[in-house]
Image (cartoon, rainbow, N blue to C red; front, side):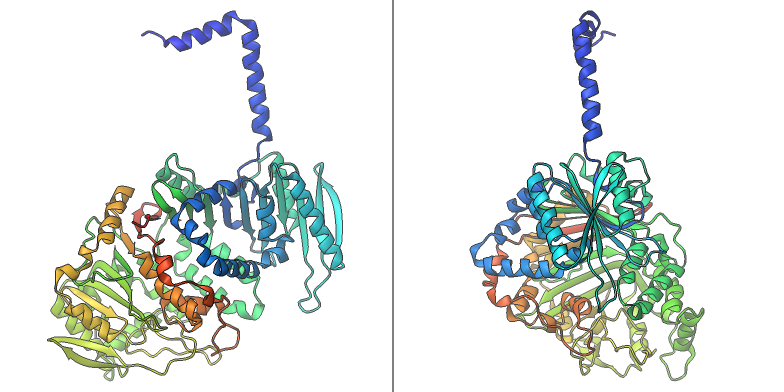
Length: 639
């Protein structure tokens, strides 16, 4: 076989021309030296005990690509400028904790960053508190970085703290220590290192020394060597191909939770720690990591994100509820309306979930006592004063696997505008309807109504607390007991209405919304005639989601409308939307029964019509794989 012409020419030049040979050798040595001097990837700098990690590959490139998106253009709209500035200040104040832990702020980082930026939360089980660490590429901004270090030192001195320098492996490390806080009894100390290429910061010297050592010789075991992290990077990069993400993130669920718990007051840790331990004992330690990537103005999308949940198995005990079979049929039920905000269609092995819910029920509701779930089922079946229903065989056995969830909003927007519907496929309408009737016949909070030949069980309104919270369930006929010191919570749908119709168990957030769904018979009013829905479904299949366990569609201009209008009205803390309830749970004041104050001044927001023209439709799909779940989502440009 003939040798390639170019190969032959080069070999002849090298063998016959000595100077050329030395040039090649010199280039090889030079390239190895450059490689040795180059900054290691951020995940090589953080230790293997990193429980949470966020990295921006190139801060300059991220800004440029974000500005190319329609959201980036919206942010620059003069009509939004007052609100954006107020929001920026609010975010800065909310993240002021980074200055408490690292001695530098996000604004400081933004002022010196020229390349990769990363932050990690490091924690070991025997540590009192987690370590926060960061690395910032500062090449070309040596002057600004030195000015930052000097400014931080002056501020520490001004607060009667101390600034000291030490040498670690031939490198100068700054130690900045603040005096003890008289209220908390805690003193804070930061450790910084800077050279022409990088700024390192941590609130633990051991972590900074590790990072500094990796900077010189990345030979120790690091986050990059953690199996869960590796699998997540591998799967996301496999899908992305040659496309380089702007943001990469990773969380080790139980380790991250433990790190967060260690930073809150001891008296608040007990319940969260018990929940984490209950999940582990029930089999959920199979969830070893989750993470992914985010890119802007890339691959033809406004935004594209990839996520992988690493769960290699074996799935034991209640972890078996995490059964989401893949499918190719994602036609929405005929009663799903055209006018909606979001639609999810997916597959779940509901009967397998029911059969394996016992361990987690026993660990949480039963506080570790085995057999509590079995007692509940027996009571429902045998108690003469109860529904006397075999919950598995008379109700759950009639479920199929297909589940659809929709959300919509009733105009004008108020705190109670959100409407939701869950549609669960049933194999036999009559049998499922009989099971539903039997289950709710003794429920005092539900009343039976007839609507056009269908039986509807309508939830009766209760007096609502000022701050509604989310409750993830409850079995009809079994009263939940709350500890005296714990605040009672609200059901997911306080005014839920249920019926069986057209092959589905329908669970609606409101009675009138359920009747609207039941009345929809004209296919022209179905979501199948929504152009944005068809566009997103086609994009999902092109993106690799033809076979999946779940698909999600969003009309983002409708999905975000309620949140926007409620912020504008100053009523977001009173919102009963799902997002509002989550925010209330996270940001609620410590005083029970009080409504949190809205921190953002929504009065500066322009009319929503200015905003919605920048919000294109979005989609997501999930695929069940051998060692976890892969998710890919995107936002399309607004047409």
